[in-house]
Length: 269
Image 1 (tube, rainbow, N blue to C red):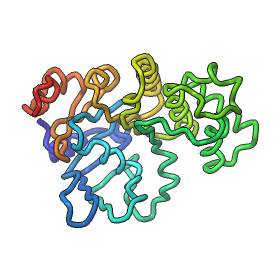
Image 2: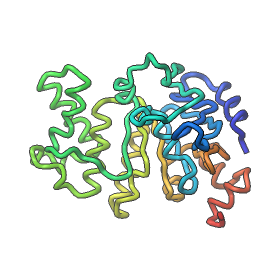
Image 3: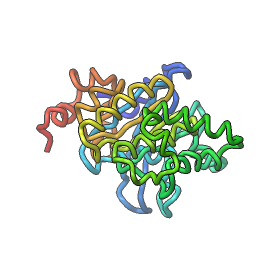
Image 4: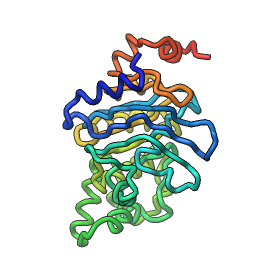
């Protein structure tokens, strides 16, 4: 098992080019005086790789994900201690432009969240807020992102249609396209296929594998087989702690901690 300190020491030995993000000794409280939802969590996030976070419900996976682009700042009273580095720079500093940070670190949620507007306006919304593109550049960026999300051919003739008319799988691909249109460095995904049918899930998994060539991805999943299929690294969390972290093949086939073995084998409890 890699303890938090051992994980941290291991990440310090890696070159800067190999790490895109680095979480160090992170504590998180939902309110002052409450039991920490995260306790001394450390996590190296490797560049252009998929890192999966697994563990039982309530173990802190989604909480950890939400600290990595400071969504917790939207809620009063939530507190974080420790470090989160993006390309060696702290994202927790009070001087950080949080809106710019969320452009660099995009988020895809469990339930598809298209805006109540057209497909085109969904895609253009963030680009207009975060850039100074002319109409031609805007349309080129939108088409490029939709093609990368394998959605262009399905929607190119109905860009002015309401996005809510898309299927669940199409809506989730739209949300992914909307995220990558902003050209982020990291994409966070919180159980992005849990509400989808098996065919749509397979399409999203294939897309994630392709996106790994350009983006660094961290995904929360309850699906053990999904973690095996698409991730390069896996972290197992339990009761707010990072119990074990390593290459996915090692964690699943040669896990060093008994709790990890129990969880993966289905004998957890």
